[in-house]
Image 1 (cartoon, rainbow, N blue to C red):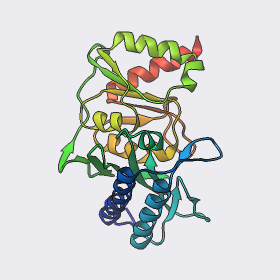
Image 2 (image 1 turned 30 degrees about the vertical axis):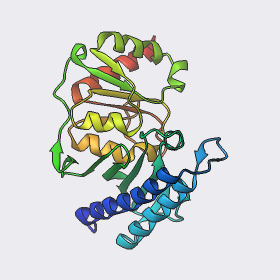
Image 3 (image 1 turned 90 degrees about the horizontal axis):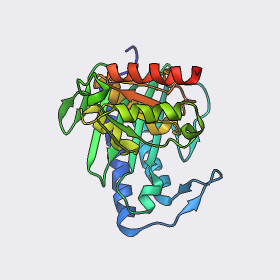
Length: 262
């Protein structure tokens, strides 16, 4: 990859995630005041301080790259390298004292997602991946399951509020009836499970690209397929996810598309 040392960039992303983890553990122990942003989503000092810690590491390691962060926005100008950062994905979980929150750091190179780190410090999991180098969990390379039949599949859903008003909602019900089991792990958790073979299909209709960019790299490098619900590649404007083993992603996408034609 011309001009980019992906291994060094991944090391920086992992270091940045660790710096954020220290901030999040600190505020997890002492508690935080909660504010509401303009879109009525919660934000805390932990979100802001974690992003500042991440930015410091990333900017030192790769000064030519821009940063697009959840709390402090996107740097001005056009850059071939763009860090994508959600310092605390799952603030609602954080403030309600549940461990289903994480730090998400991804790198986009000329519009392509090339590395991702997903760190859940209280839950106790970190996964990472880079283009061509696989997905890693606890020092071991991981792969998605070999599941090809819906009857043997485990499905997980996350944020699906807007999907309930869509013609595909009934088809999701049919997919669930035809599957082996349904779960709702949500957040980082079901993508981690998918990447290491514990789940077979994940659907979400209401996400931010900053929530899932790193996870997309992790799932893809584990052999899975990760698109939006329309089967399109992720962009900065993506708002939904269909991710799964190759066979089940293809099957689910075909059924969801057919539902829209009825």
